[in-house]
Amino acid sequence: MITELDPRLHAFDPDARVAEDSLRALLPEPGWSFVSAWPAQAGAERLSLRAAPDPEAAQVSEALPGEGIDRLWDGPDGWVYVRVQTDGYLGWARAAGLVDAGSADTSLQVTALRAHAFAGPKISRPIRAELCLGSVLGRGEGEVVEENLRRWVPVVLPGGAAAWVQEVTVSPLPDGDPADLRADLKAELALRFLETPYVWGGRSAWGLDCSGLTQVVSAAFGHAIPRDADQQQEFLTPVARPQRGDLVFFPGHVGLMLDERRLVHANATHMRVTVETLGEGAYGQRLEASCTGFGRWNG
Image (cartoon, rainbow, N blue to C red; front, side, top):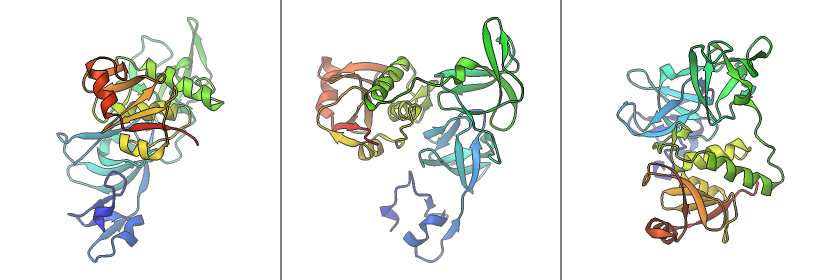
């Protein structure tokens, strides 16, 4: 029965014989221990999820600051097995990177690609946290402070520390309705990631992989899609002819279409986010030859 489960999404350890409680019916053999998750949050730093409880293990994904986390079971040496609530992805994380969810305020979302939280309402104050698109903050006590034509908002970082961000950091993105406008805005946002370094398992403008790019861009406009390229392809509606904002798929890879031929993607060939044209040049020809289809959000 275990072979039918996806270890990216189903929490079970056949060696330790421990699994999440929801898998009881799928693991009827004796000797299993079942656990229930309890809620936590990623702290004020991006939380690396790894394939094993080892700092040398491959990074499989990241949780962004303030994202909800299901804490499943403890491992050795301060490691804990967790699930990111936004996409259900599993991995091992350092327990020190988690904070108690409690009744944390999550009313503010960072909309800047990259940003910093400061100790006070001034750019010369010490940096308290490194933020990114999709980070979740609370609204701090007090009023907005205007300083040298800048507007500073008091915030609460994950874990409860007080800080300040400029208002532009949390200003809403443009409205994405109707659907064709939202698709265009996705493409525009994806282009803002150009030259971002490629990082396996990354999900932020500090460094990301191919499906990390398409996932965070989609999420910015309310479209929650799975973590990995193959999961995204299965999740979206297949289309024969791509439009701006559609996703394009290859074996183990995904990009976002800018029109019928051009795509923007995070790729390990150039080690950064680039724009390519299907069928153009040696690289574009390889991409076109390996394309496995296109997908569109129809939710």
